[in-house]
Amino acid sequence: MPDPDGPEADDLRDALADHDRWLRTVGTEGVRLDLSGRRLAGFALAGADLCEAVLVDADLAGADLRGADLFRAVLVGADLTGADLTGALLGKADLSGVRARGARLRRVDLLRTDLSGADLTGADLSRTQLLRSDLTGADLRGADLTEADLHLVSVDGSTWGGTTVRGARGTLAEPDAQVTVDEPPGPSRRTVAELVRVLDGRGAALVAHPTHEALPEPPEWRWRDG
Image 1 (cartoon, helix red, strand yellow):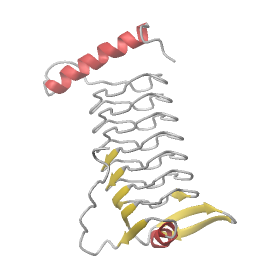
Image 2: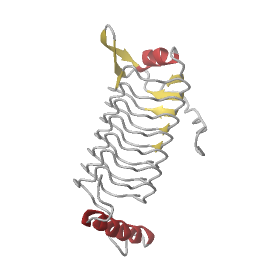
Image 3: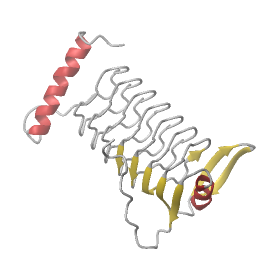
Image 4: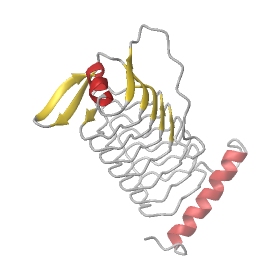
């Protein structure tokens, strides 16, 4: 674990203070936080205000980001393996291409979040809100979507297999888009509509929404307050 009294931790605290000033003054003072490529594995950032921070290719493996505000943050290609983001705010954040194997994203707000190409293998997304989120090309094998609330989520080109979905509800976009279901006897290509039927047979209540029909109302996020 990083030394909380070490020079790296001191530098981070200073950078966070500058970022807070940048946010409060709408950019007229302070400096926007840019930790691109930094090694922050295991750092304690619970509750941190990382709104609009730039963390491209940052190493956040095992980091504590519980309750952190990452609204509009840029985490393209970041390593979130085993990180804990329980209760974090990730609305409109760019997490495309992140490595988040085994990450805890429980009860997270994923409003219009870009998770395209993300490795979410074994990640915990239970009780999470995915509202118009982009999971295009994401790997969801072994992920846990128990009691998640989904609305018009794009999953074209994503991979599923051993994914837990009991109690998940809502809509997936583009019923004719193609996904991969990687389960015995081997991987197979399915349409989103076919995927929905598979998942509904495992305790979900999902609908593949045709693009030409009127947009449905998003489901109320059941777990907003815990």
